Amino acid sequence: MTLASTTTSTRIASRRDGPAAAVDVLIVGAGPTGLTLAVALAGSGLRTVVIDRQTEGANTSRAAVVHARTLEVLEPLGVTASLTARGLKAKRFALRDGDRVLMPIAFDTLPTRYPYTLMLSQAETEAVLLQKLHALGGEVLRPRSLAHLTQYDTCVTATLDDGSRLQARYVVGADGMHSKVRELAGIAFDGGTYGESFMLADVRLSGGGVPSDEVALYVSPAGMAVLAPLPGGLHRVVAVVDDAPEQPSAGYVESLLRARGPQADPARVEQVVWGTRFRVHHRIARSYRRGNVLLAGDAAHVHSPAGGQGMNVGILDAVTLAEALKRAMAGDTDALDAYGAQRRPIAQQVVALADRLTRVATVPPGWRLLRNLVVTALSKLPRVRRQLAWRLSGLVYR
Ligand SMILES: Cc1cc2nc3c(=O)[nH]c(=O)nc-3n(C[C@H](O)[C@H](O)[C@H](O)COP(=O)(O)OP(=O)(O)OC[C@H]3O[C@@H](n4cnc5c(N)ncnc54)[C@H](O)[C@@H]3O)c2cc1C
Figure 1 (cartoon, rainbow, N blue to C red):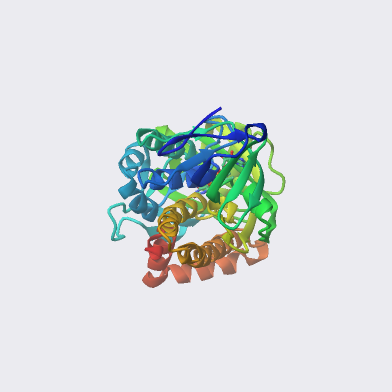
Figure 2 (cartoon, helix red, strand yellow; figure 1 turned 90 degrees about the vertical axis):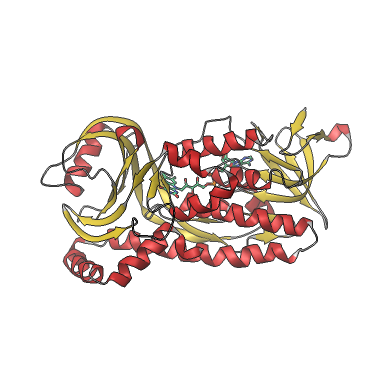
């Protein structure tokens, strides 16, 4: 079985075949985090292998928001221009109660080459990253699923579900929320789960009250709803509900938007292109490293999609980790602990911000008037609006 890496070709030896081949970095998971790491390591001289348990293109749309800081850090990797060419540029984020804007957050005054939030489906973002990886001579081995890890002082042996083994100097768990790498490394994932479920739908809408260049977070007695434009004339709707249907119908999404979204000129749902439901967790790995095993992306942190941060934080983890791995391979092993020391507090801040936004959006009906008064008063303070813009765009983490 031939196993290609970003810099070399090698083999996974089955148990029967004898000793396993050695590589520098095994990346488990080819979502946005793993792909970014692979692209950032390509050309560095490190022998890197990427595996994913899914066949190509099986990941769903999920993240639709790419923030300014993410576009900045992807620029040296040669990915940003392709992303911006495909995406839709939303210049504002607004907290709304029906048609009333409680807090407008402007991105177009931010000091960056990317003064907007780029709306693009995660599938497209992954396709652009994968294309870049291929252009650099790398590839993802699919479907290959990690089953077991054995740690030694100077390396890790990874066993895949087909029984084949690969010996790597370092293994990176970029394998998402239910990370097998995290589990096998015995790293706790502290936090909890929100009680409500979330409905997500990519829809084709009509109705004049629908903002076309704004990501809107609607707060209402019925619960929160996010309404954001996507390329191709679509909109993303995310709503917190008691019990979301497995496949939301057009009528279901429309009734949610009528209760929570634009009021004077309500949205009509012409078509549901894709829909799903999910539960939201807020958890952080107790450590980003155990021995020669490291975590990045959703494997290390998960939180509410309010603020659209998850994929963005994972991509930034990956870029930082790539530099740490290069330094570690050059003999600076402190670099790996420095990676966790730098990125974990940022994940804590992001989880806290997403939690605050979720709680503000889901206050019980009796608190709604007070909530609106407080948010409106805060929105009058330019400093508050500026801080939120810096946090949401990720520029605060420069
Ligand atoms: C409904 C929804 C909406 C969201 N909206 C946003 C948003 O607007 N903005 C935002 O920034 N974030 C959003 N997120 C979060 C975002 O999708 C995640 O943060 C992002 O996908 C994390 O990327 P990742 O690469 O770390 O993990 P993942 O995307 O989960 O990728 C992990 C990969 O690892 C593979 N894998 C898993 N186990 C194994 C194994 N044992 N062996 C081999 N491979 C394995 C999987 O097949 C997968 O390809 C949303 C999430 C959801 C669920």
